[in-house]
Structures are given as structure tokens and as C-alpha cells.
Amino acid sequence: MNYPYIIEEGCTALGEKFVKVGGCGNFSVLKTFDCGQAFRFDPINLQDYKAAFSGVAFGKKVTFCEDTPDTNGNRIVIIGSSANDFDSIWRHYLALDEDYDAIDKAIISAVPYGHDRDEMTAAVNCGAGIRILRQDSFECLISFIISQNNNIPRIKKIITALCEKYGENGNFPTPSALVEAGEDGLFALRTGFRAGYIYDAASKVSSGEVNLAEVASCEDYNRCAEMLCKIKGVGPKVSACVLLFGFGKTEAFPIDVWMKRSLERHFPSGFDHTSLGKNAGIAQQYLFYYERWAGGGK
DNA sequence: AAACAGGCCTAAA
DNA sequence: TTTAGGCCTGTT
Image: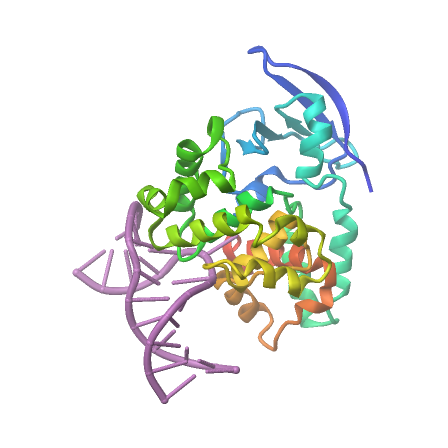
């Protein structure tokens, strides 16, 4: 695989720092930030780039721009940050150190020859370039609690309101800040019936009844899910999303309405995600993207 | 206007 | 153990 490396660092005409990073494989800024895993990024219009997204993660404002690939087909990415932040935050956040080419091959070869493998190959080709972001676990937990029975624009709106009202400097609020907000304060942000769920999550995390560090270090997926499901409003789907996007448990395989449709359409005789092991979550993103944004190859 | 949106909780068989 | 309603709100 090709490891990411800094080609150039500098400042824009406006004095904002940037780094130009090569060796990013087939990494796609567009697919990664358009596949619904992160709620605090929005597309921005920069004519020089194929795709650009701007947002906040880990308390830092950042922009990711998809530049043209180098002569070997390796993606170059412009990141609006210091070289220091690239090394300490964004390299890891974007999972640029993962060998996705190898993962993609493993996913395809884990599916039996014939119809099913053809379907999976099509999904992988369609979603190739997506990276599972390594997001903050608490932010992820609250975000996916909010996502239930909801749509993306409103999810984003609520999260923005949470950050503005209860976060420091517009950052994502801490558990204790949300406890202080109280269920009423959370309800006032138009969270609806999820206010009690958010409050319960904040309380249990802040009291240690649900220990996120323990979840992070636990190797047993079912036990991890069990711990998170102690929170009201956290069930199989939300816990799977949180474990996948917020804890790097890539064996998680969230099944929502889109995934259900995708599996029914492409694998009518059934699909066993456990055979994919640690790659199940990545395959899930491909199948999800294939169904939702590419119409499932109809 | 009525249905739906990246689920989960609760009550009832 | 499984199944059906209901749920805040905003948009179409």
C-alpha cells in the first residue's frame, strides 16, 4: 500500500494553513463525507477541486479538498490544517493508514463465487474510496441517538444547536454539559422524544455507569453492544453505528431501512455478514452507499 | 393532507 | 419471544 506523506505545506493567500498530502490511495473526500457517517461536515464550493468539505472534529475546524491523483493514480488531498494537526489528528481521523485496497479484495473474496460475489463486487466498485472515519465516541453516540426516526438535515440542525448552546467555543458538548442542560433544555432544541434518550446517555456516561473507555478496550463485540444498550434509546442499529464510527469496531454491521433494502435486493437468498469478520462494517458502508446514492445498480 | 424520515420503547399476546 | 402502535418535528 501507499502511505500518506506531506508533499507541501504552506499558507493560502488569506493566511490559512494547509498541507498537501499524497499517497492517499483511492480515498474519496466526496464519498467519505457524503455517506452519512459524519454530521458536522458540509460541502463547500471550491472551483479548483472535485470535492471539498468543511467542518469540525475533535475541536478543530478543518477543510478537506480532493485534488487530482498523481501519475500512479494515488489520490492527493489538500487539508486546511497545520502539518502538525495532520500528523496528530487528521491522518488517523481519515484512516489514511489503512490498506483499503487489501480490505476491498478481502471483502470480495469472502463472498462465495457466482451471483453474490458479482453483487458484492459491484457494491465495492461503487463505494470504493469511502473511509470509515475515526470519530469521537461520545459525539458519535449522541449523534446516532438523534438520528433515529429522523432525517439528515434535521439531525445536522439539532447537532449544530447542541454545539452552539451547550458546547464550549462551538465544540461538541461534554457529557456533564448535557446533564446540566437537563431534559427540558434538550427538548427545547427540538430534539423531540429523543431528549430523554440524550439525557440518559449523558448521565450514564458522566456517572461512569456506561464507561466509554471500557467499551473502547473491550474486544468482545456483543459485550460492547450490551454496554451501550444500557442507555435508553440505544438499540441494535444505533449501537452498531456508534461502535463502527466512534470506536473503530469494524466488525459492526448496522442494518437500517436502507441496508435492509440493499440486502433484500442484492442477496435475496440471505447474507451472512459475520463471514466478513473485521471487514463487515466497511462492506456495510459500500452496500449502503450503493443502495442509497447509486440506486442499487438498478 | 398525509406520509415519511438511517429506531426504539412499551404494552399486549 | 415476537408484534403492533406511537413518538417530536420538519419537509414534501
